[in-house]
Image (cartoon, rainbow, N blue to C red; front, side, top):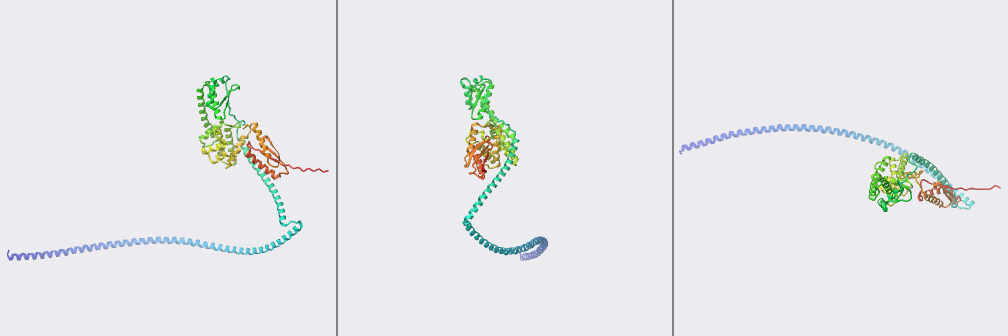
Length: 519
């Protein structure tokens, strides 16, 4: 290449570089202007946004300020009212305290004055006391010179005399109070019992559980006995009852301690006699069916009694036991009938006394429930009855009344006392029970023996079939007050030691006669 070409190329290169630099300079200036514009615009937008945020913040702060200010004003007002109330209360208390202080000061002044007055009276009393002591000493000396007794002896003699007089007066008042209370109590009790008896509709003749089966003819006895006695042996074996065939015309006597077995045997024999087919196989079948029928009847009879007396919530087993009582007798009195009577009587008396009538009737009906099984268990019928009542969920009041109706345990409620009364009323009514001549005479002898035991008793007589005992005492050994005490002690002793129906009147007689002759 020639030097000219090189020069041209160099010039072109320099020129191109100058143009490039010029263009670049122009582009840089433009870019700087764009950046500056954008920056200024962003700063303006930021300032506007900052102003907006500041304005919103100021508005929010102002709103919160007014809100807190209002709350503060309300709280301030409430606290001001509360403080005003407290202030008023304090002012009232202060006024009351001032008044109380004035009252106390007034009382203190009065007490002070009374103390002064009492001190003066005390000095006066001390002076009089000294004078009395002096007079007393003078009188003691004078008494000793007249009677020859010192002060202690005279005092003791005087006290003994006063004590004897006071004792006689106390006994007299006690007797008067006792008689008055007894009269009122007897009158009230009599009214209640009479009301109960009048409203109790019962038969005057008691039912007896029969033990005799009538036969259509004497020839039937041979069929009952059977060939070589096989029929009667089978009857006795399956029933547990003794069949007595004697000279009694057209009758077979059944003998057994268990009344249920005797009743099963009686009914079974009656069915066999009516049917006419009497042999060991038939006997076993009829006795088995009769036993099922009678045990089914127990519950039905018990349920019927409970419905009639309007008693609720009774255990099914107790219903069965009540049904068994239908075939149980005591002194010739049917126990179920006796229980029903006792329930009615107790209900009436409870109504008169304002007690629970339903509870009273429940206790009266169940009080002899132990007699349904007393021939199968050991113990008294009242104890067995209490165990059964407890077993079948009866109330403690019912249990105690059953257990206590023969005074075997202490009565814990008035219902137990009513049970004793209702039991005695039902048992003692005319025709209710029979008593053997031997036991009757023995009871009268025991009654006279108990009445004759106390010291000072001259004679004792049981009268009115044992309803009353008259006791004649020696007047020189027993005073009127002691005679009254004797009757009370004897009544308690008779209640504990003697078993008797109804009640016994204890009549203590003390008589002293003074006889003189004018000549």
